[in-house]
Amino acid sequence: MAKNDKLKQVSVKIGSAMGKANRKAHKIAAAGSVAQEELHAIGKQVEALKKQLQATTKRLKKAIS
Picture 1 (cartoon, rainbow, N blue to C red):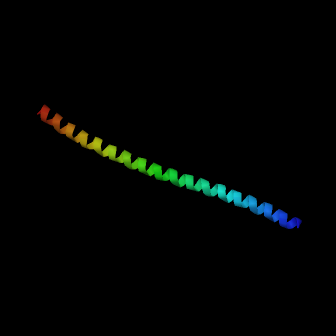
Picture 2: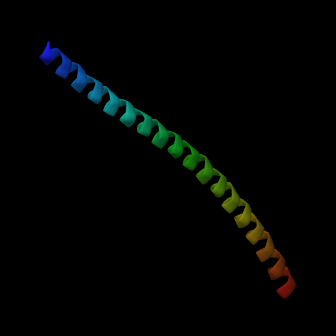
Picture 3: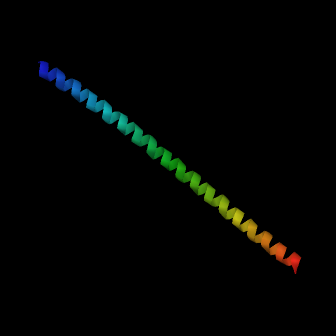
């Protein structure tokens, strides 16, 4: 009986550790997804600024010439 109790205790500890690792993995995956969305949004902003810079450059060239 004593061995079974020890085995149960060890299995509970292993299960708890696996559960904690699984929760942490899900949190990391969710954070990665959020980071990917933010990176996409930043990319859109960069493209908009790039277009704005090109338009400003054209206007300046016309003004100078």
